[in-house]
Length: 144
Image (cartoon, rainbow, N blue to C red; front, side, top):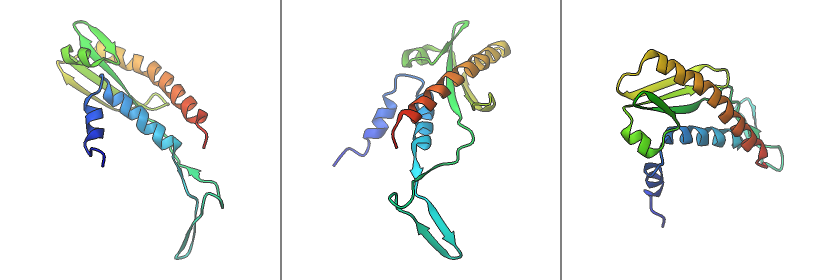
């Protein structure tokens, strides 16, 4: 039997920016997933086999991705490593969708100047576009 805590150990042994990696992996899994087609008539429900009907993709309208930053002195570091996170005075993660809308954000540690947060968000918009393109290419490249 495999160790039931093996997956938790992998997550705890991250190299930094684990939330970014987890959001990218979760969205890749959801975009890759195909569910069986279903026909519902009255009280009757038929789940069609993959030989009968092609499986369907989930209807996902927004793809939020996390972009993390660390403040080291008067500089901000994007996608900080574990050691950079350990010495940072503060961490900031912004979650954006493809429409440049902020879905969520969270910050820990020392206060950040407003201008620094705005710079991080501006950088995150560009990085979100790059990661979104990477995600699209990875999911489209996978045969179904």
